Amino acid sequence: MSEVAVVGGGIVGISCALALQSEGHQVTVMEPNTVGEGASWASCGCIAVGEIVPLSQPGMMLKVPGWLLDSEAPLSLRPSSALKLLPWFSRFTANARPSKMRAIASDLARLTFSATADFKAQLQDIGEPEMLIERPVIKLFDDDAANATMGAAFDLARELGCTIDEISGHDAHELDPAIAPDFKYAAVLRDWSYVTDPKRLVEALHQTFLKRGGTVKRVGAVGFDREGRKVQSVKLTDGTEFFADQFVLAAGARSKGLAKDLGVPIRLEGVAGYSTALSDPGVELKHTIFYPKGGFGVTPYDGALAVAGTIEFASLDAAPNWNRADVLVRRAHRILPGLKTDVAERRVGYRPFTPDTRPIIGRSHRLDNVQFATGHGQLGLTLAATTARLVADNTAGRRLHVDVKAFSPDRFS
Ligand SMILES: Cc1cc2nc3c(=O)[nH]c(=O)nc-3n(C[C@H](O)[C@H](O)[C@H](O)COP(=O)(O)OP(=O)(O)OC[C@H]3O[C@@H](n4cnc5c(N)ncnc54)[C@H](O)[C@@H]3O)c2cc1C
Image (cartoon, rainbow, N blue to C red; front, side):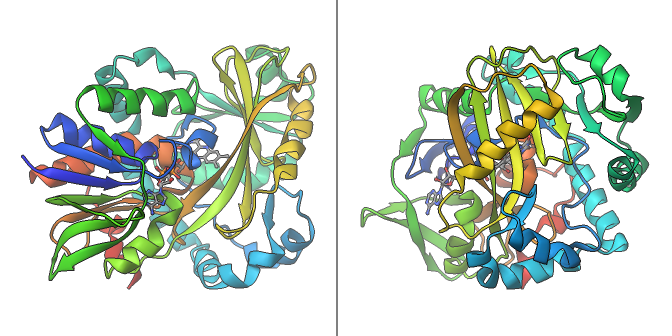
């Protein structure tokens, strides 16, 4: 069994670390911050099996001027970051053609369709099976226009095997009485489920990893030492090097620079989102609710609620715009009229997004002992356990349950 270094302790990195540890490897995670504090804590907590239609949609380029001007819109582009993001963004919008969208959705479905089973196995392994709430997620629509926009995405998802029922807004209110009764339509996404708190989930994975003998080094990676096709060590911010037999790159939105140092250029940017936990929401929800027009979702936490979402294209060095989090909380009254908004905690997360919305999983043909586990965009929580299974199977030389060619780190060069 070998010594493995995992760079990055988000939901993806810690899941890979646990899976490799279960195979008998000695695993060390390099994480400069608190495990999970990156994008993972800010997540809505959904196992979003049907979230397979890419974020890049036809006609997006025409909307850019509006995004630049309205910093409170559900989708926005920070003017100060626009130039920096341009190369990534033009590739992102180039993927909005129907044929490309179908191919991406179909590739993502191959991963998400095993996500619930992989996630359940992971929760069972750490003794926390009750963290998964197997209830569908509900999306709410005010009018025909909003419903029609989502309709095309729903049709594609259905064609690929997702189960989505359309019901009236009144029926949605009956299912979850806290929901305002006056929505015109609702969609029930039957394949989805949610976790009671992504922060608690990552902490449980982290604690299990430590109890089983894993190590977390509170230090960042700055690069790698390589000889030919083999990486010898990861160079760390404290000036030391960590030597290992195998390496996993799972530094979320910050993976791009490290990949470049490995000689494997990848295209990746962080897409910001915000999450606000409300300590005493005054309403009880049974389902996670999404309001696409407002660009957010509301997830029931243990005894509380979190309002999370928005897509903000802002470079990683841009400071968080907390106003966007506050706007979401105000808008949440539209769907939950009885909501009390005492803020317990606000979180920001940079979703690691590739221009084709596909994650980056597996080995580059240039390196023998490095695996990539990053670029999961809006699906990191959903796909962490599946990615960990693929990384562990790859390390063991077992046949993979999914062909990972479409997720190769080499596809960008
Ligand atoms: C508002 C919001 C809602 C979301 N909702 C959902 C949802 O419902 N379902 C879903 O599946 N996904 C959701 N997501 C997406 C999901 O949160 C991300 O895809 C996921 O967290 C990515 O995990 P990660 O481990 O790759 O990245 P991160 O959680 O960002 O972890 C990367 C880690 O790498 C560390 N790191 C960075 N640089 C270095 C370095 N140089 N050396 C070592 N370590 C480093 C960071 O400190 C960080 O801890 C949501 C995201 C947001 C923002």
